[in-house]
Structures are given as structure tokens and as C-alpha cells.
Length: 380
Image (cartoon, rainbow, N blue to C red; front, top):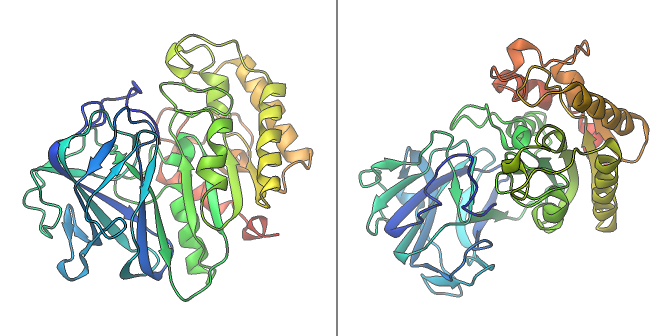
């Protein structure tokens, strides 16, 4: 998640919400019998008053299956106040779920929230309504869809599903927009972590797959555009998640291509990054993961020649980092996303695998990435 001051594109986060209901949809990859939701005010500047919340199975755009609607409570109350920088976790509710179910979470804010803590690039459509409609199963009141079309999630930190079955530990996909899924289909659930979860399920190995990608994120540097540096958020976004067994790391391209972009740094251009700095950053991630008993898997940095930020010097850095990833043995295992998108090592993502910017995969590209993951790398 990130603060609402990021200038990539305007969303509802800048103005926040006043006497409005907010309806958001998330697909889950774990089945169970009970659900609880984590909400975040990590970047809020005032306490967040949440005056009503509910959850149910999705029935269509902005609609909920009526017989599945559940009221979310917080220590028994239907409302809660989340302190500045804090979080709230709902009480568990009984709601049977299956892998690939879509769940709709509805929030109501009676007062004014101020700028919102949010996830800028959800690749799903979020809706809002004037007034209190968080108990309405129908979509009638939800006449506004989030702008722009890429979608955003607001205040949602996580969904926890429990049940009688014991599943293998979760896989967390950690990275930037290539993990977040820019270029995927809106509401299509075809980012590479989605497709990995589907592959695991189809082969009889269901496993939670969590997406901890943030568009424009850097490994080493915080920015208004990309949020907290990967090094700074790794513990919160990966290691503190429930039952994490493996992290799959794909990060570093933005450190290379946005090093002299004032929107890609803390507000001023930063010196060009070096391969050694990126390697040292990756080593820090490995140490942190191993300290918590989490398996660390690296993905090679994908090609971006032809993109606006490409330079020969940057390409040389990418090559040196990838050589280290492939040969050093520092990570527990390696997934070669670079070769998945560029099998002949041309330095370009294949034309049919990117959205036209030579940087972001399209759905076929994300499929190639997911298919390149040998399940054995996810297990000890």
C-alpha cells in the first residue's frame, strides 16, 4: 500500500471519502470456512472512522450474492476507528469459500476520511455510492466506478481465510508493476501470481499465492511514485504475512531505469544505481527471509530494451545482476523470467508478449512467466 500523494495517476485516494460506501472485489486462492479482513490506515494523517463493513461472494459488477452477505464486526462492534499509522482486523465471520472465489468487501464512511491509504494498481474495478449502502446486495446505488480504468483498492491490507484443512505455506510474489500486473486484463485475474495460483490448483497442489507487487516500486529507494523502498517494506509486506513459506522476488528494474527521474525518487534525482548496490540489496532480502525461516527465490530481471527508460549502461547493470542471480547460489532457487519473455536472449521482450511499451507483459507474457515457474523451486 502507499500514501495518496503518488502522482502516477489521479484516483479517489487524493480526496478520500465523505458519506460514501465503497465496494471492492478480491479473488482468493484458498478455501475455508471463516474469513476476516485486515484494514490499514498506514499513511493516514487522521484517525479513520469506519462506520460499517460487510463481505460476501461477488454476484457481478458491484453486486453481492444476498445469502452470502455478512456483517463485519470489530470486537463485536459494527464500527471502528483505526489510528494514524494503524490497522484494524475484523472478527472472523463464517463464510465458506473455495479457491478462485471472488469476494466483495463493502465499507461505509459517514464522515470525511481525508486522503486514503490505498493500493494504486488493483487491475480490478472498485465502485462507490453516495450514502450508506454497505448492506445492499444490489449494485443499483453504486453508480461510480473508480478512475482510471486500472482500478485501486482502498484501506484493504489482507484477507485471511481459515478452515479445517491444512494448506502448504503461502508463496508471496514480491516486486514492482510486473508483479502488480500492469498490462493484465482488468477484472481478468491474469497477472502472473494469479496464473501461478491457478496452475497450482489445476495440478492438485492448491497453495495460497499473495501478490505483494507495487507499481513503480524500487528495491533501494522510496518514492512518491513507487511507495516505500522494497528493502523497507519487505518485513511488513512479506515476512509478517500469515504462514509464509516462500518469497519470489522480482525487483530492480525501476532502480535502473528511473534513477534520474525526480518522480521515481524521494523528490530529487538520485545517482545512477550500480549492480553492486542492487546485489547488496538482494542479499539483505535473503538474510531477512532466512532469519524468519522463509525460502527466498529470485526471478531474473526482465528485458526492457525499447522502453523509454532503457540505456546501454542500464542494460549492462541488468546483465550483471542477472548473472549474479543465476550463478551465485545466494538465493535458494532461481526462476528465469528474462528467458521466459526473451527465449533467444535478444534483449527485447518478444513483441507478442508485451503491451507495446517494451517493459510490461501483456496477459500472454504473464502466462509465459507463470509457466516458467517449476513448482520444485517453491519447496524446500
